[in-house]
Image (cartoon, rainbow, N blue to C red; front, side):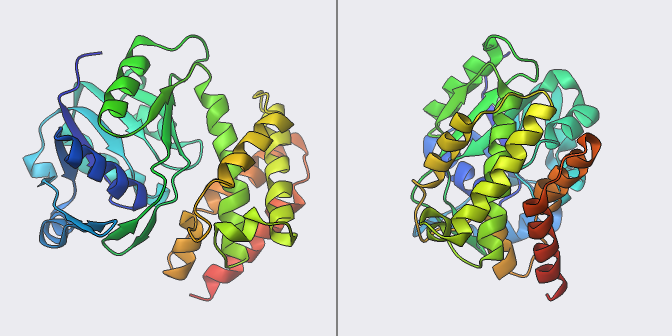
Length: 303
């Protein structure tokens, strides 16, 4: 992999703002990628991150030239249009990362840009809360990156992990990336959906009670499904992800709860929707995820 000198990011949600702020503070050659309408708004308003005003250099597709690293940080529903907006910034040697939730965005990026450009990634441990152009967070979390195929850590994954860590984004390169993505899916299915349905914060599932039991039950359904899909998650893995969730700022909240408060459609199809569809192929019952899916759809129908 060639040395990384230029970076672009598309999608200024909570994670996009957090990572963009890190790149700006690091002094790296960094741009936000946006269509013309969003670009004008970002240039005008900037962002308020943990109380500090931050300005970003913004480029539109018409101003696009190939970059060394492009990070996709949109919502899942916006990935298709984001790929077209970012296409002028992707060249022969561009490395692509997705910090989207779920287990499917890398495959979509591979189909559009080629498998050789895409590294697999999960973002974990962040407790960022976004309201408009304002972002607050206590824990910047960690990126975990690696190749699709299990094995040793590749040279490019190791080099990128070092680069991102030096830029202020703690990053770990691992040899079992897709298994890690299933672990993150397990956590998201539990914590995102439960906090949304119980209309709470991280504290809601950090303390004993019905909400925490719902989260754990939803996660165990994913654990069983992952093993049927060939990814050997264990109760130990589940406990590690729960321990991570218990470190998050109690008054923070996951993205789906933030979506509900803003009356935005959530990513329930990425979570319970994925679990329900895959479970059917194995004849597996997933009643907790079915309940969460049904309840979230009811909540969204009232917006």
